[in-house]
Image 1 (tube, rainbow, N blue to C red):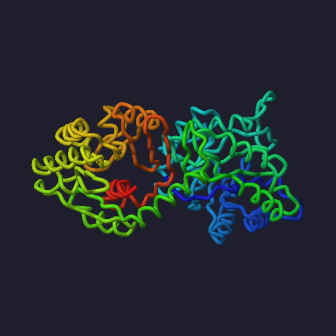
Image 2 (image 1 turned 90 degrees about the vertical axis):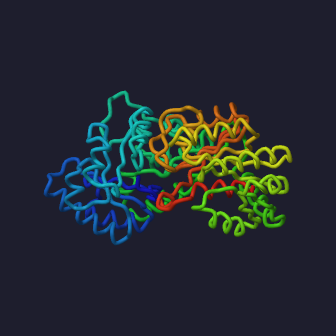
Image 3 (image 1 turned 120 degrees about the horizontal axis):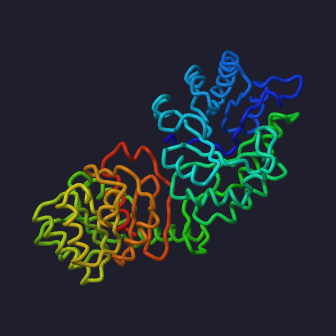
Length: 447
């Protein structure tokens, strides 16, 4: 999946709508100057050679302004001009095959006409999904009785793929008269934390006498889309209250400098200690059996990371956890690679049965293994595969263990069994380093 693409003001071209006296390239450049962030060249009635000629021109304009440029339907054209990607319909080549032909760094967008199609596209790794037309439009043929997806249907689509980190662009009949209504409705009615990432336009820009002015007006409305990174389910806590609480907690950590007793693997021990200091807490990296009970008793939190396993380390985990429970000290357990071997899984289960764990933090493979849930699996310390219903998994496990479960990944899922939170802040760079997940567990302990 290609991250960090901006589809907030998405232009779909149609040469037949260009005003007299102008060219498509002129309109596209004016639109970009007005605020267009993404361009799709859509030429349904164009011969291949002419399509390639236009594509090269539009690509050069987009490249000059550093704007992503994709081709509608035609993968051969995208390859011929080295476009940034393609936008596919339901009757076009499937996403997996398109990726194998274009390569992993190309953008793949797809139109989803139903919620099930949207789910399948998200699972297949589409970079973004274009909705069914919100309102009927003359730029695309529909049955005579077609009334459009509507803003209500758009919200249903967003909710059904809220578990995925796939962007969504609203499209179809949108203009300066109705866009505000759609944006406001989505902002107020989404239930699972996923909002549209932008809106797409054709005639509202291409046919406008002044494309730059028309785009600027649409961009100002699109900017009102609320960027929701975290949403508490079944709760009415406004985002600003969450931010305020986190800010207060950060201040409290620096003011009180809590002692964090961390028993962790050798790979991240130094990083964990330095990050603990950086955030304002005090690190203790003791793992000797003879002293872990004393440190667990005086610490403000105990973080147990099973990355390094041996009989002596297992004893240290057990003793520290039991001492922490007796002293009323919270415990964070990181079940590193729990799904990789039976030894690791049994170790985690034994620890969970031996003492009260405040937070269980792991990746999808680790949490799935503990829950006995299929889908994602552990590959060493990494996780492969996906979990079909992550909200359900973390909520159910949290209830069973009477603890808080945090499942990290491109999207993080956190649940105490009553409320569930999703955080859409993943970054591909985290896959390029080792120990990022272990470091998160250590950070959790500081709060």
